[in-house]
Length: 113
Image (tube, rainbow, N blue to C red; front, top):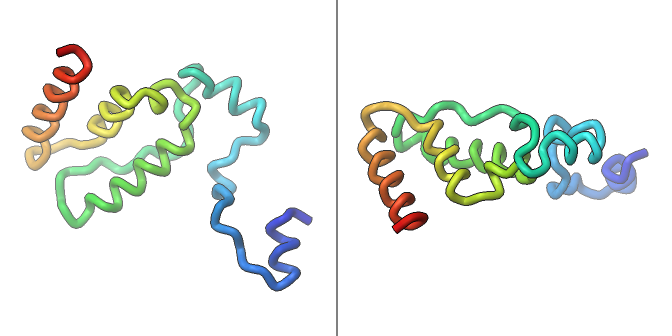
């Protein structure tokens, strides 16, 4: 039995520190060889496009956070500049267009003043 099953069998609770099964690759070796240092494609489901609707902003943030954690070893997620641009690439529409443009300029000013 796995440690989760043993814990439940002994009357314990399900530990929330374990990643969901869908987020775990078959082996650690497979993950490191395909997702280390930007080698290989990103894994998991990317967040749904965010159109600027405030009531959906927290869900978008949660979804992107999961996507970021699954791909934590990939270079695009390791580097904050690329990670910010990746998040912005999922934001589309007139409600966010001006904000995105301003954020890109601000990022560029910070990276290459």
